[in-house]
Length: 369
Ligand SMILES: Cc1cc2nc3c(=O)[nH]c(=O)nc-3n(C[C@H](O)[C@H](O)[C@H](O)COP(=O)(O)OP(=O)(O)OC[C@H]3O[C@@H](n4cnc5c(N)ncnc54)[C@H](O)[C@@H]3O)c2cc1C
Image 1 (spheres, rainbow, N blue to C red):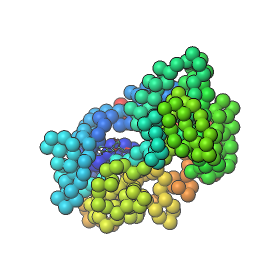
Image 2: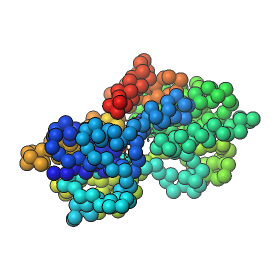
Image 3: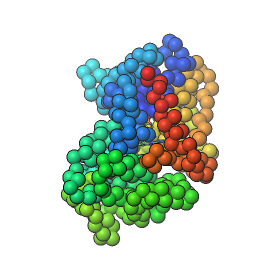
Image 4: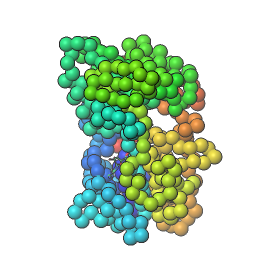
C-alpha cells in the first residue's frame, strides 16, 4: 500500500511522521517543489536578520530518510484520479498511489490590484523574505527611506515590528507605515483588546498605522489609495491575503471558495482515498471552521494519517475536531524588540510571549537535527 503526500509543509510532514508512527510497513512517498522545509511562521525575522535562512529551513531528503520514506523533489503538475497517478514536472515523473494526501498550502494574493505584485515583496516564502532583505540592504540611506507594509494581519504586524528592528540595528532612518483596509489591525481576531495592544506597541516604536485605507494601485514609486491619497515608497512588503494554490484549479474536486472541501474525516468530499489537510483544506464542523494556521495544519496531519491507517485496516474513521478556528482564533504574534503577544480564549498576554514563540520554533526545528 502506497501513500503519497503532496506538499511537505507543516501539514504534510506531520502526516508523514504520524503514518510512520502507526505503520512500519507502509510505503510513504513525499513530493515537494522545494528541497527544504520552510518554517513560515518565523519568516518575518529574516528581515531583521535575527535568524538565518538555515535556521528556518531543513533538508527534506534527510527528514524523509529519518522516517524511512521516499522524498521526490518535483513540481506537482496535475493528478489523474482514475489512474491514481500524480504527474510531476520531472522525467519519469508519473507517480502512482493508493492513498493521497493533498497538503500544498496557500499562495499570496495581490487581489489583482494593478502594479501590486510587480512592485511588492512577499515574505510568504523563504526566497521572498531573503529577496526583501537583500533589497532593504541596498536602499539609498542618504535620505529617510519609505517602507510600506500592506495588510495588518498576523504577518503584516510581525513584519512591521521586524522592520523597526532592522532600521534600529542599521542605525538608519525610515518611515514605516502599516496599511489596513479594515478599522482594526489583526481584523481576523475581531478583538479590540488585541488590536489596541498591538497598535500601541507598534505606534510606540514609530510605525504609522493607517487603518480603513485600501490600496487602489501601485506605481513605480508611489502607492495610490482608494479616495485619492498617495504615498511614496522605496520598498513595499505585501502581506495582505492568501489564495488557494493554483494547482487546485486543475483538480476536478469539490471546493469551497477554491479550497478543497473535506468531510469530518478530512477526506476530500466524495473521495475514499484522497485526504486534504492544512491551508489547502476547507474544514467546517459544529466546533467551527479550521483556521489556516500551524496548529490546524499539524492537527489535521495527525488525524488524516490515523484515518488512512484505519481505512487500510477497514476500521471506522475518526472525526476531526478543530482547535484554532476562524470563530475562535488563537496565536502567538511577535512585535519585534524581542516582544510578542499571546492571544488565547479572548485574552491578551504579553509576559513570556516572545520566549514561548521562540521555544515553539526551536522545539519544532529540533526534529530535523
Ligand atoms: C509569513 C508567514 C507567517 C506565518 N505566521 C504564522 C504564525 O505565527 N502562526 C501560525 O499558526 N501560522 C502562521 N502562518 C500560517 C502557517 O504557516 C500556515 O498555516 C501553514 O504553513 C500551513 O501548512 P501547510 O502544510 O498547509 O502549507 P505549507 O506550510 O505552505 O506547505 C505547503 C508545501 O507545499 C509545497 N508545494 C506547493 N505547491 C506545490 C506544487 N505544485 N508542487 C510541489 N510542491 C508544492 C510547498 O513548497 C510547501 O513546502 C504564517 C504564514 C506565513 C506565510
